[in-house]
Amino acid sequence: MNYQQENLTISVSVLTQRITQILKSGIGAVSISGEVSGFTVAFSGHRYFTLKDEGAQIDCVLWNSRTVDLTIADGMIVIVRGNLSVYAIRGKYQIDCQAIAPMGQGDLYLAFEALKQDLAARGFFDLQRKRALPNLPLRIGVVTSATGAALQDILSTLKRRSPHCTVYLCPAIVQGEAAPAEVAAAIAALNQTDADVAIVGRGGGSIEDLWAFNTEIVAQAIYNSAIPIISAVGHETDFTIADFVADIRAATPTAAAELVTQRHSQEIMQSIARTRETLFGIMQSLLSDRLQQLDLLSRSYAFYKFSDRLQNYVQQVDDAETSLQVSMHRHIRSAKDKLEAIASHTKALHPLAPLRRGFALLQDDSRLISARESLQNRARILIVRQDEVAYAKIDRVSLLTESLPQDFCDNIQINENLTQRE
Image (tube, rainbow, N blue to C red; front, side, top):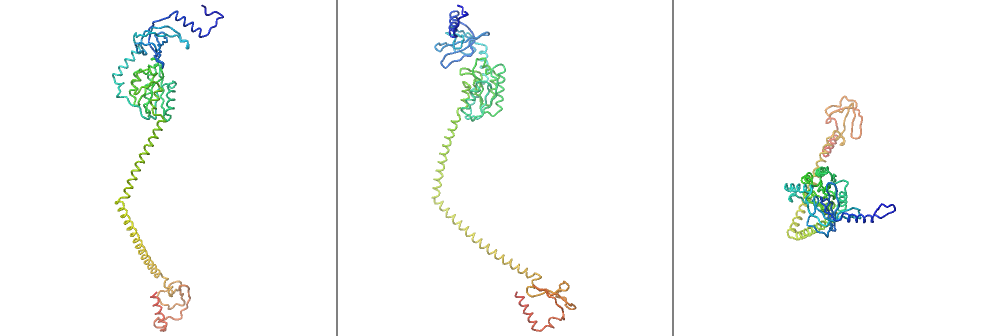
């Protein structure tokens, strides 16, 4: 039948059905060999993989209703028997596997097993060296592609479960020839930070896509890391050398983020609340015990005796204070009396003090006349008293006891007596 006739128009579904019929009738059942790649098991139990050789590849499906006595893994060389069919939804042809048997093992699988055995013998996989994850990490390192979906899965999970955490991203390409060196360098760089734990991984893919994590350089970087490492490479069914060396293996990058945040923010707040209640109960119990002890002490005989002794001491202090005040007043009064006597005596010694008692000073030409000098041959003198000055003229000068009347001398004697009493 010629399907290119000018006026013939068919739907995609009809065309796919006709291609399926041609494949089944023209080729039918086949038995082919090739290397298994990208082997996955769906939630339904159906198994999917790609069979390839150096020049081509074809998709295969092994339904869960068909059992095989073989553990299928990437890198295996197998013989597949089945029917050629078409997966109409995607427009792809595939082999509906009826049976599968081993034929040999591919180069990558052999290399994987050789490195695995070598590292195991060197102690890279020893359980004794593996470390537990920190209970409450606050700084989480991530080594993966900066543009991959794995990073977004990790970041979204960390933000949802532990938004308080700080994330240190050390990006690296995770596929291709340069990937192993970049992943190893990123792990080393992360060890220069204060990260508490690190997630190293990528999303799913074929054994070739994941091969960077099956290299010795990456295994060595994980082994030498001072930071606990969670390996999160591919899907749940994918296993790499990195998984065996790492401290913990996670099925997926999302699962790794969940592992590292097992105690998310809500649980932490609840734990803090429980701890606070526990501490409050402990403090209340301690306070109650101390109050009971204080009550017992306050009612004890020793306490009352101490109170009596304390009152005696207080009274003694009061007595000492009163005695000190009396003594201080007495000393102050005595000192004041002495000070007043000294002041009075000092005032009496003042050169002009006699003027207040009626005595006078004699001056001649602005010069004091002393008691030893005679007033003879002086025409005029100046008499200085306390409140006045007199200008006098001398008529006659004679000795005091020879010239003055007796009553004047008596008066002088009386004045001298008064002066002595003063």
